[in-house]
Length: 226
Image (cartoon, rainbow, N blue to C red; front, side, top):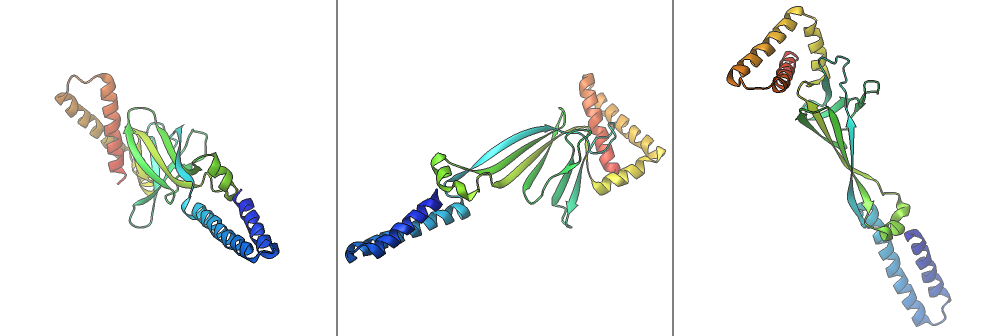
């Protein structure tokens, strides 16, 4: 619509300035037309550069998540560090056992890890630009910037028994677990910590004990992978 408006104003300015016989009126048409043209161009730039007439809109989706590795006894959420600082991470995840491995984009996402006693899931909050109302959509819709991505926040809800490891740590863990002695030590560590906790809190239910045992096993696994 704004392109049509610009063309119409330009034509009126041109023909009014050239073909109107009264020079005083023609000059006024030209001046007003030039001002309107500059105003329309300014609106186009403001929309394209500063998203004038638009506002952020959040789209939320929730997906079930399964472990990237095949072992159901030791589920994992893996990540790949970028650079030397280790601050930027690409998380690897699957939405089902048969789905392909997917990964986050560190340039466009903010990732959060939240421990949960429920099932693993990924809550993705995608923020995009959307027009405030139908008037702005009609005016600037031709620019095609509606739905333009701003930022995505991924919240990984990870159960207590899931280990969160880098791809390098996962490979090291796999090597260590091939050693029967290390497997035995890992089991003993978990049992010992659980026994100590039960001595301090003897009223714990079976369900609480299972959650705690899963947590201790995950901590032991993550330590073994260091």
